[in-house]
Image (cartoon, rainbow, N blue to C red):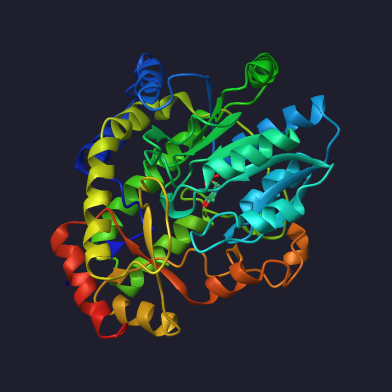
Amino acid sequence: MKKLINIDLLPNFERDDEELIEKILKGYEDLRAQREVELELRKYFPQGEILFFGSAREALTFFLSILKRIDNRQEVLTQAFSCLVVPNAIKFANLRPVFVDIGDDFNFDLEDLKSKVGYNSLALIIQNTFGIPAKLEEILRLAKEKNIFVIENLTHALGARYEGNYLGNFGDATLLSFNRNKVISSIIGGALIIRNDFLKKDCLENYKSLNEWSDWEVKGLLLGTKILLKLKKYYHLKVTKGAIRFLRFLEITPEMVTSEEKQGIKPKNYLRKFPDKLFPLLLNQLKKLEKFNNQRKKIAQIYINSNLLNFSFQGEPNFLRFPVFSQLRKEILEDFKKDNIYLGDWYRCVLAPCSNNLKIFDYQEKSCPQAEKISQTVFNLPTLISEEEAYLVLEKLKKWLK
Ligand SMILES: Cc1ncc(COP(=O)(O)O)c(C=O)c1O
């Protein structure tokens, strides 16, 4: 059977990560790992207080809850063409998401953003979708003018730059994700970098009271991941997919978005600190960040050279995924699966995963027409693959995108 290419299934895990998982399962601990992770992150974010969470969505709720305490404005500007965990995170902080349409760079459309800013706008979240920097200069200018807090979402874009500087060094706070299909991964995890000095003290004080993951939960996560990594080799078999579903049912390899979250319900145990035991895994991945991102850049360039660039961008993107469009998306994704290649479908709906009741997330249908239109035809190519694999993907794609 052909080698599996799967954009979603633990794409960043290599042999050394697998060995480390085994080691941690046998009791390995490294008390210096957190400090070393912080030092690695300082290469990208020289300033700001770094706090670690179970996920980026929790980090966002945490930060917004702090803002809510000190300011009585209620609205958070966020873009359509996103993951539904983002509006959920806003609502879990008892604030209101206001959806902004996107431009042809998959980020905030500036005109729509300007029209939606009002006296009640507390913060805006810059998404940097797929690793493409948003139009930072104009957004920052508007935020300054209207005195709105700026959150840079780097869940797709860790390592991307704007005017020579790494993203994440422009706003009041920055979000990182270490979830399974992100730029780097420690299975789960996220971080909040607080750059606004005025907010640091409150954040640090409130962080102290957050709960921790229990040892058995972390063990379950590691064990589930160990099994998943083994199953990856047999992904083409029907029985493997059944086994993966069973692991999800047992909650040792949790869904990226839970059934509760799809209904706008806050999951139990939402808002916890990052587990200490996973810092060595995070450190190992961080040390490989530059290598991963160089490869992503190389593969994205191959796609660009093959005339697949059908969108605009500014700055220096770091493509977590490379977006392409086709009316035949469904057929293409199915056809690739026959060759054991699983392409991505971010974002097949304005708020993904698809829900037939977007009102749960305060989204009014037709309020962001461009996002709705783009979500009907977009799909994504992997970037953390070998050059040989990229040419294989291109060869197969050629017959569809003529
Ligand atoms: C744009 C965006 N922001 C935030 C998140 C949340 O990241 P995490 O999975 O770490 O909570 C996601 C998750 O996919 C995302 O796509």
